[in-house]
Image (cartoon, rainbow over all chains, first blue to last red; front, side, top):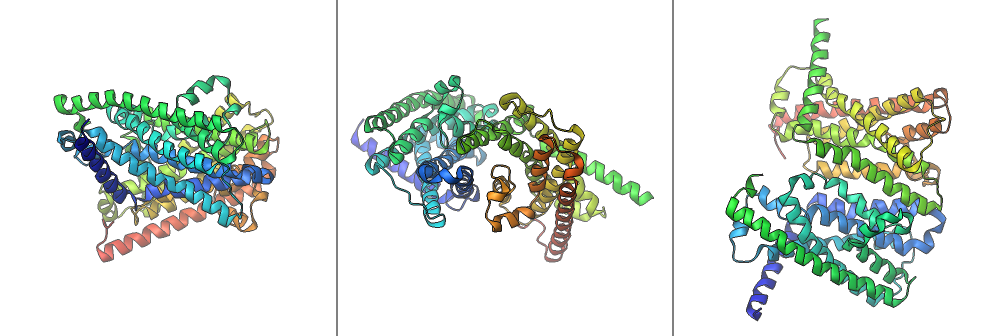
Length: 265
Length: 266
């Protein structure tokens, strides 16, 4: 790919991200998902765990923050193309020379980056309000894990968005998809608690590897190679997501351009 | 007599029409996802979290708490959307233009959601029995049904108040979601009330669900209706207070909107 094209796409990603961020920043639904809900979940977990909270405090902070990341990805990135249909701009987007996945990538990047606020809010809340000392055991690996989490979530959002647009019947399950990922990905409790047959479902979900990398890097209970393995799995998941999303976007754009029916649903 | 008949007709017609209007855009799949699998997921999440948190293999405390909390799905979201729907669909001016009894009109909006909410709680218990082996053998079925009914009424009362708030704010879903999650924290669904700080316990006393959840746990543990009657009476009274507050707010909003011409103001 030529350099000028890469630069052009990067500029499109930046514009889409900036535009989405400006639209989202005062959206009360997003504020709920990123700030309020993770805080309430963190508080619930703190009180539920009670006396043992000292040893699990980092786990709670990271896990509660992850709930904000997933909720926002599901509802905001999941609707990132559907919203264009609601506002009547889907066809215009399909007609622009910039490929639609590039634009949606930018939108997802804004959503996911904004959701990182949930992690920061939970950390601040637990430290300042409850007075717990939250220490990250492997700061460098934690930062790398966080960066890869953002990329993996953005790429996973590229699969969810066209699926929701192409299948309104799947989107009807959006509300019911929030907790299963909290459960299967071990955000707030280890997946070892779940029946064994659910483990393969956890393994195919990028948020599972993100939670594993972030939990391990922050709690420090495992050796470095396991954290690196989780980060590598996030890279693999991102690549697979990109490949799948390529096909999904192709189907979607064919429907927009040839059938001209997508905006009508 | 004629007036009473008229108000009753208005009550039931309003109740029926607002309910089918709310779900008219829903297909069975949406209902199943929201009202069947949504509760299942919430029960699973908090039960596993509870088992991990308490190092226990018995999730009954969390299953019962979250099953009763299911009533808030209908009581808070359903009722609020039934009332707020008139504003979003542009039918509020027509509503305010009628000489209909306002109390019958707004309470009617909650009527079907009470049954829907009860069904949700029963379904929650069903999931608990099926997946976590919740033991209901000691429970007096009549006492449990009465508890569910009264808890659903009080939660719907709060929904009516929030629904009236939805007539003056755009952030209905923010308010509803926040209240729903705060109820998870304050109602004792997941955290024993005596482990909450005294300030939070005081707030819990003024919220619906708190006494209902405690009563349900007592009945499932083998208690009888007489034991929980005082708590249920308080729960019912609280529901009535919320309904009256909702009615007062509705009338105030109507008067202000007519006086200032802000009927459709956002």
